[in-house]
Image: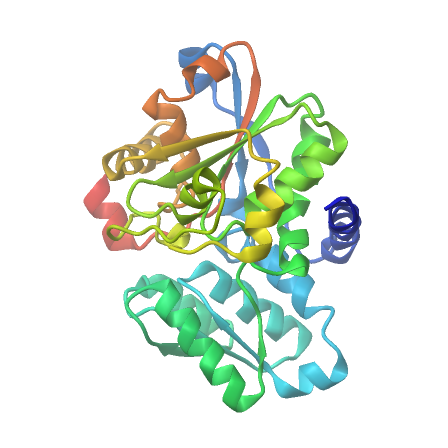
Length: 322
């Protein structure tokens, strides 16, 4: 494990250099309201302001930028509920690579349209992300396209981990970082780099009660599927976590939180009205965890960063919520 850990840490630093001129160094802003309510310093890391509206471009570009000439010639294929799709599409366009994206038929229209706008060919297939991913893998086996994993890949994880470096640059004495979890790429990368710099930083992972494969796997000490219903956090609607992300995250995560769908709605509304932040369901998970009260004992007198992972919410859904 130590060899893998050291290698991944190095990859994150390398990814930061690779992404320097590509991604936005997103702001870290304090929440005066939540800081007052919870009696600690709470800041938001605003990846909803990232290119394509989410953090996913980091991992996608880091992966695509390292493909060989032969792999580039074959083109790439990916599966995504929306944000990874846009990250792969725009990265492929910047690097001159042909891309095809498989998305669930339930994917928000705004994410489908944005992916097509970035130049990718989109195919809607499968009710859930896991069905869509399987279809994309089967297609790649036939066409010989390079499958770009949304989370279960060291290059992708390293790209997402650059968020951790930016947090540490902006707030070196951060006590804990709250992160949403889908397949686990974001939290694995951030946890690895944060713990390598300061092992005392707490890593707090959040998922919905409706879909929490990663947290269920961590509690069971083995990969376990979990999905009882759809979730507003569609970007985190992943029933089965990745093998790599599970192995990386298991020894690094300190606290886990499950939130109800109603609280995710409240968090989206709160962020829009009170903080002037537009967040999609997955992006609001960390705020939902704070608002739920489950973390109150950890927030007092501590410096906490909540990652707002994306802002690509369907306009109809946003209207209905607020």
